[in-house]
Image (cartoon, rainbow, N blue to C red; front, side, top):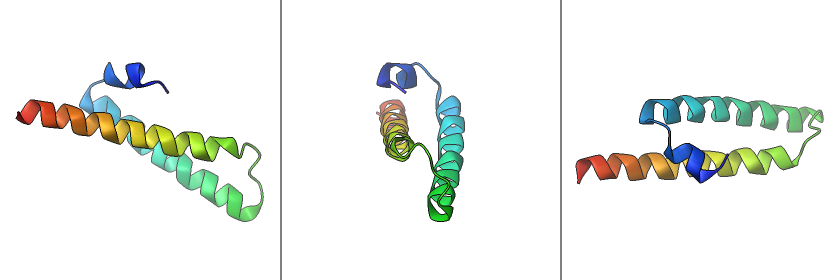
Length: 66
C-alpha cells in the first residue's frame, strides 16, 4: 500500500484497514509457527503497512487538533 493511497482515506477507513492488517499479521504469525507460511516477505510488508497507517492516522488527528 502506498502512502498516497493511505492519505486519501478517511480516519474511519484507516481504522478498518488497520484492523484487517492486524488480523492478517496474526494469521501470518500463526502460519509461521506451524510451518505453513509460504510468502515470508508478506510479514515484513504487512508490518510496514501497519506502521504507515498508524503514522498517517496520527498526522491526521494531530492536524485536526492544531
